[in-house]
Length: 222
Image (cartoon, rainbow, N blue to C red; front, side, top):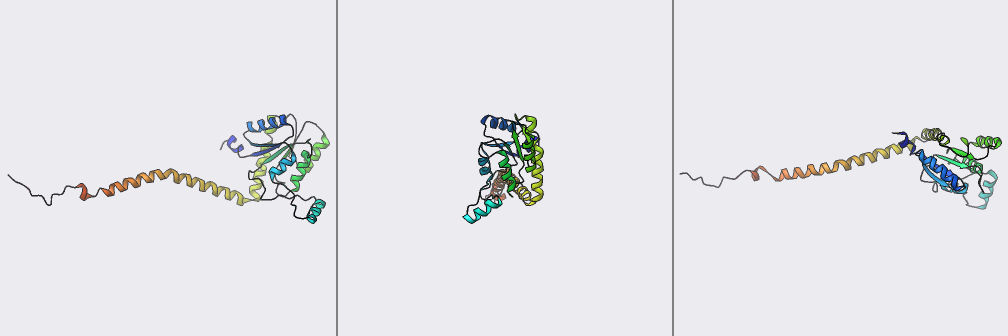
């Protein structure tokens, strides 16, 4: 499998409130053959990832507000796997740091690598994001060389997921095997039909029907 084909399996969620920056990172990621989804806010990113507060009753809400626990509903969890989130730091409402914290607090989302982007080189901000669990802190404008740094983080995360959830990989391998067998059967079916048709024709032409019958004929002699 080529590098482009392998990278096409990786899906990146890009988060930035700036349309220009969003288009730039999308173009760079697609140039590197990644699948890309873009959103313009941290709240939309969490919605895409399936994150939400479970609002069953007020008592539970009070307990969660005290513990800051985060819930992700498996039913609402996105069907498309996200292998990495790259987000701008400065955004209105929810900052990139807030998004990072919520993801790391979630048992469903904490293993997704998060990369922070910013146009401001503030060491304290960078250290805070890295301490919270960010894989990289990239200074804008983002370049292709920066995008190339993302691949190892996604590879490491994917390998960790396979080790922790081997049944998922086994299920994927079984699905690929079933699909391959189905395609093989579809390919061989025309040949089987031709063979069956030829067999029917041969059976229809019995020796009695192909050989002239002289039993009831009288032989005339001069």
